[in-house]
Image (cartoon, rainbow, N blue to C red; front, top):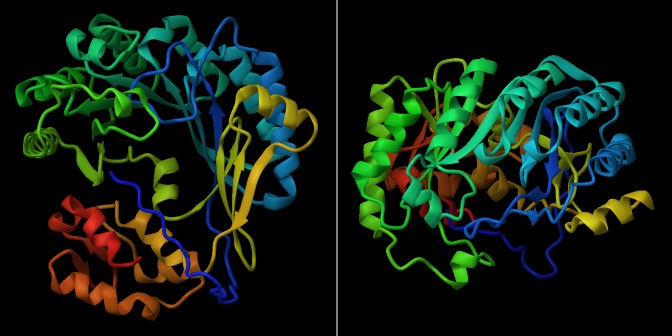
Length: 397
């Protein structure tokens, strides 16, 4: 999906904000190393050249968390997400130590969802069992495809056999897990995309993520794009076919690219899409924190070496700024309208400290054009609105 960033008018004075209730708070932990950088990846990831400095990095994460405590003091954490990079490069013992340190410093809800991302090329039975014993209760596997030809085109370090083995291990050790799949791959047909879905369904994953390959800026694919990518109409047909296949298998397409069986929606991501708060620690991690009179965004130092050095000096934050009141409605909608069920009108005011009347005119215009459904209980995108989400969002810039 194209990224749209709102820009406030020059010299515009933001209206005063007053937040009566703090949103739910999640914790994001970024692990920046990968075995090899994939050509489509625009995340803050770095090839691990030699051993990952696990002990030093975990110590830095703990120090980073401690420095942020004044901003979140007393607030319960509802979910933790280890993302990357490839968090499964860390040993289960490192994850265990880090989770113990987190529990000692923040009130973690007893039923908190704790997700760890893993790649099939970096896992084995003992590690999965170790992650589960450490307290991870949800795994997210970056499968992308089970087809060796497509995995090679994507620059992945695993093959179809490793993908199947990892999915089987996830099903063995975790009650809830996610399989990431991509479609619109170089040279991929609709039949091949559906074959990946059918293979994934053999492992009965409670959650699936299916998203189209996009050529993001500052990636190798952006500079050297594959020559045989499916056309836009072909990708749209793949999306329709995938949604139909998964609906027939009992999966709820509750978000643009997320499908879940009952009771297995990703709570961490739902908090993002409901414009909840999140503290991000680790190299390049982002935070969004609601204080009583403002919304604060932060970014940690991106390069792992810089992050380790700056955190040792008690300065892990590279950038910090307040989100202007004029930008909050768009940021809220950019998240909430990804959800099929949309949002209750009261949530807009709770998360932006502004009345819904401020955006009522473009809401009604979008409804008239068939992009939104509006009612007293919820405001949600129509099927057309979900298909043309950027067009819908542009109305609120």
